Image (cartoon, rainbow, N blue to C red; front, side, top):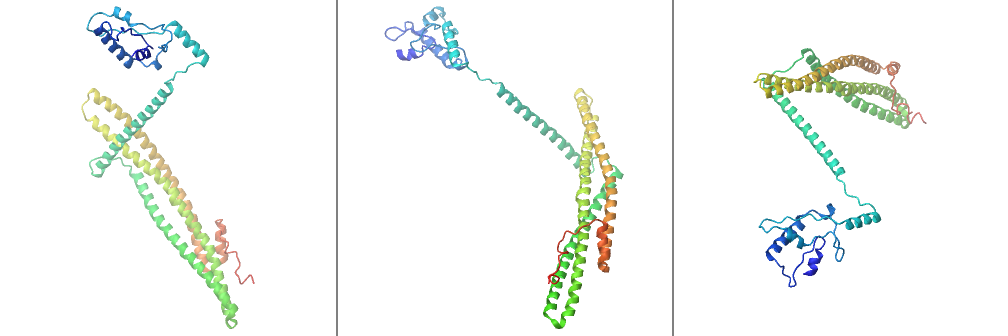
Length: 375
């Protein structure tokens, strides 16, 4: 028992009688309970400046319980325990120990607090963005449903809406032309390959059939010439297909992307306009006036966005029309000249058409001589 008590002498010493029973049992029992409660629920020694000596060490700064008993009032209330502070010699030993082993660094909570505040700020910002997105989506959905069922009004620019619808219709028709031109390219490529194979077969038979050598030779030369002209025509058609594809899937699509942004801005503008009109028809108390002012600000923001995108769409539609006329004039002239020259058998005019539009044939097969010419 004495060893257990001496192990707790880090903070104070409790004198006992010779038989292990304290002199005044009631007061000492209550005092021990209070001391144990203080030792269990008291501050952590690692976080405070209280340092006590070990077993057998100096007892400076340790207050025995005898002096506590004298200061305790004889009442049923809980005794007040004085705060134990280290002595000057103990503090001196701690300072010398710190001087020998280096300064003791206490953990700082500032970095953790900074990261925590940063994470909290990011979370709050994301929550605010989600809230604004939800409110905007609700208003736009409400406006869209009202327009679909004919209960809500919408802003309409008749001239601009007509141009947009004309653009979409033109795009659909050009996509049909592009699909047919690709089919023509595929079929004509198969025709050229068939003519090349047929010409090789005629050339082979002209060598193996002496009695029909001249006839097979004429047909072989004819198919070879048609194959060469066909590859030239394929170069013109491929250039036509590439230009139409660029016009549809890049130029027109870019304008239609701006049109989609304009239509979204128009829907938001009408949604916030309807919200402002609804608030304006309500009572004019202090809370409603504050909401009306906030709705007026949002309405002005979306109005500016709508007008800006409407101007952008108008400019892009005008530039698209000019570009479309220029591109299609060139491509239609090329297609007409190439097709006419090929079926008329005018090889010089067909090659001149490609040179006019700076078209170079990428196929090396047209310049490669046949096996008959290599003999």
